[in-house]
Image (cartoon, rainbow, N blue to C red; front, side, top):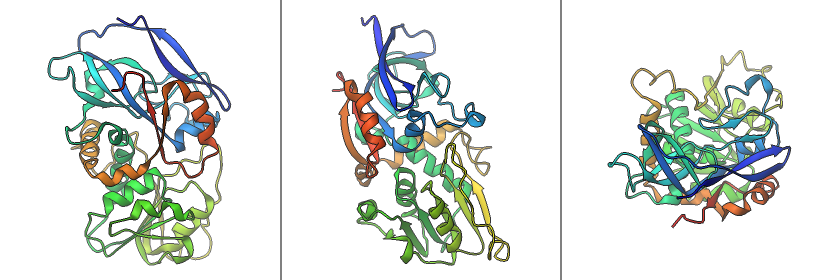
Length: 326
């Protein structure tokens, strides 16, 4: 049995390292998970990497199994897929998803893992946390039949939102981004990928995911009378300007935040976070989500990988593969 496990820690602005910690056995109601792959989402994780988490939201932005406090040193992450090595008979040997930092083995409560469906590939299952965020935003926004919808920002969250929405009976669905390379996320679907200057207005709903002032302004400009913008971007320590002059009040527009930390109010009485995550994993039967996996590297290279991702504007989800992940 291993006597130590290894995890990735952010130790300073733009700096991370691998640290070992004592291994421990799973107790009653717990499982030991051997990690197969984990994933890095460029949004929140790179803000953590840059030590840019605002102090006033540090407690709210804690990951479920985070160790340490912002800004650093902190063990952070939330996209992990592994196999259960020890625990209840019905889980032993099964692949599971867990909102756990990057670590080769770990022990968590049974309630913290969600089985991966047999027909969902291991690497694609890393995206469960991303699709879960998209589902929560859709519960917040409540799209209706015949709606005209724009998603601003074709990153992981925006792309996943558009993909789930592509099965809805909408009048129009546009995915808006300045980067033409992101058009691949809309391929072979009803999603219309367009640059901002070709986006159509009179929208019933806009989901903003670009984390940019210009994206927010575009989103508000696309709304029709009494339209609603659902804000999913997290700006960290930045304070973006919002264009609330002009016709904002005359058109009676609404801006509302959506965040995955709590189940959307419209479903909170009837859906748990576990229900939401299981729903997300079911969505990942769609092979189109493989387009979100834009790179892979070894766990031993993770400190250098995180630095490289800080300069890579085209990356979506970076896979981290583990030595025993086969």
